[in-house]
Image (tube, rainbow, N blue to C red; front, side):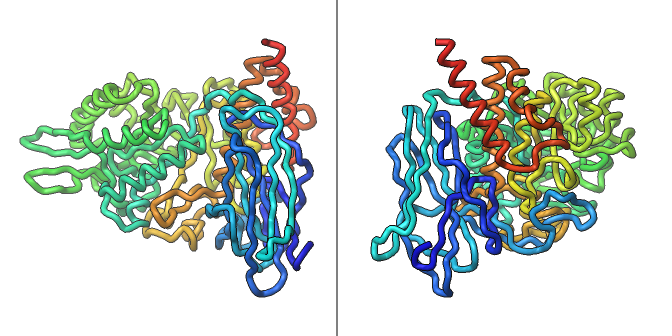
Amino acid sequence: MMNNIEFCLVDSLEKVFSTDTPTKLEWKDVTLFQQEQYSFQLAYRCAGEEKQKVSIKISTDDTIKRSLSKVKSVPSDLPAYPDRHDESYLSIAPGLFPDLLEPISEGEIELEVEGWNAIWIDIQPNLVANGEKAVIVQIANEADQILFKETLNIHVIPHSLPEQKLIHTEWFHADCLADYYQVKVFSDEHWRTIENFIETASENGINMILTPVFTPPLDTKVGGERTTVQLVQISLTDNEYDFDYSLLKKWLEICRRSNVKYIEIAHLFTQWGAEFTPKIMVMENGKLTQKFGWNVNADSEEYQVFLQAFLPSLTAFLKENWEQKNIYFHISDEPTENYFETYSKAKEIAEPYLKDFTIIDALSDYSFFEKGIVKKPVVASDHIQPFIDHHVPNLWTYYCCSQNREVSNRFMAMPSYRNRIIATQLFKYDIEGFLHWGYNFYNSQYSIEPIDPYLVTDAKKAFPSGDPFLVYPGKNGEALPSIRLRVFYQALQDLRAFQWLAELKGKQYVMDIIDKNEKITFTEYPKEGTFIFEIRKEINRAIEEAILNRV
């Protein structure tokens, strides 16, 4: 401690709260692959009431990319459901939670004075990095006196992790971007922001994008509506539909530029039962009108006639503009046993036009799969065991606000190990895809009104903070990351490493490392972060040895 300022390095799974002294980084030696992202934090406590200025410098050679962010705390009125939580939360009391990563540059910064705070540091070896590297973190005051200096030793393995196999979608809400920035839908400014947010998604392992051919019928109050974001322009003349795909083509071009591999088409029927039709705008007799929505039944003749025209046209366009096997469709989100009949009927209407494509839907009830109603289920992580027990192949999983006990999740009030541990589970059970509903949902529940995500992080006390969105809207239309986004991406890197070693030495070899001390299931796993760093170190060492022995 010097000049009334205390510093220490902490790992990426530590959440630094103002009132709690953080745990110091236990190790200073790290093994990374080329292009692998690694994060750690510089925690500090600045005594006194006046903010002090210091300079921060990260010294390393030019093969190591580095970036800095201030960890900003955001308010939560609902960190956890009062009657639905377990013991593995950091807090269940409303308050401030460290989450937002606000980019800063090296050089002069102003330190916060309210208790403990943190600066987030990302490093990433490039494609020519190799061998031993030193990353030196140095803090100096305005008189150039060194206040803190510590070194992290990096061993860079001269290989990159294999490409991500997991299909990963975080539902993209284009309407929320138009609403937050108050720009016209599909104006140049809206498109620029959309591309920024898709790029950030792709950079963080999100390789599938929800595509609003019409406004997605998701989290919308019955009888209400969301801001129209309809990529397919539709006209109706003399009872014949015509479809303009120019906006959809532009969307796909953005996805392609951003290295997105998969697209999923917005749901063809309303959420929680497939009883009604999505909001669809149609130009009819020279006037743009809402032809479909809550007032039209899902099995109406009118909608069936529309789908009979639309789906063959849409699928023909998609086949010409995207790889067919990487296009996914939805019927309706989260059907329950009360809606067997309506969901089955909706699927019966749409499926004949989608035989060349994969249909996926999120659900919790095994009977939907057992009866053949949903052939490719996306299963809630706390209801997945029956599917595993029945050896359902190529499973997908998801979690949301309801997965609030025992299983992995990423609420702000949860420790970050609970976010990152999912890599071990995805690997063990050969999970093919992961879905989450909230990449950037900046509305209250049921989309009754837009919210400011810097002030409201729980959709107005509907979902635990951390569930509705992963990124924050920056001042210039850029997507600002959260701790949760970074940690989940590093879980995806873990998964890529596990899969690579499995190719080199067999899956059981990897499981012997992961399952060595404690059984891993979706509900059972070590309740601490050191385990994750230790198994990655062992996995990396085994990969390096296997590569050397293969040469």
